[in-house]
Image 1 (cartoon, rainbow, N blue to C red):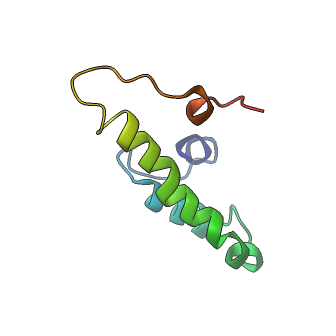
Image 2: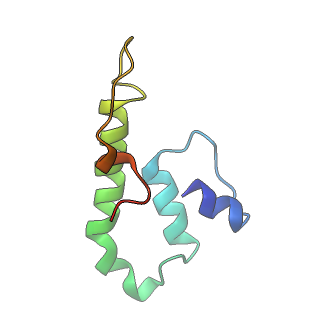
Image 3: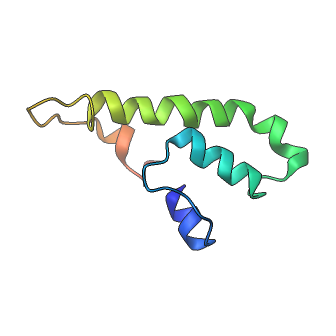
Length: 79
């Protein structure tokens, strides 16, 4: 979402949470108003699912030892 903000020259704070970035994308019209209610489940997943995986498995939850993360959770080219 930060890449979307950068590409579109939208202002954001580098420390913004997923929720703030999603709300910013919505308010900037990334998803048209008439479709926003259909995106409620996707929005919830992006706000809670992806950040939880990151926080629990790496970043905040990793601890002092490097944790191996299942490739299916982190790969951008999974099929």
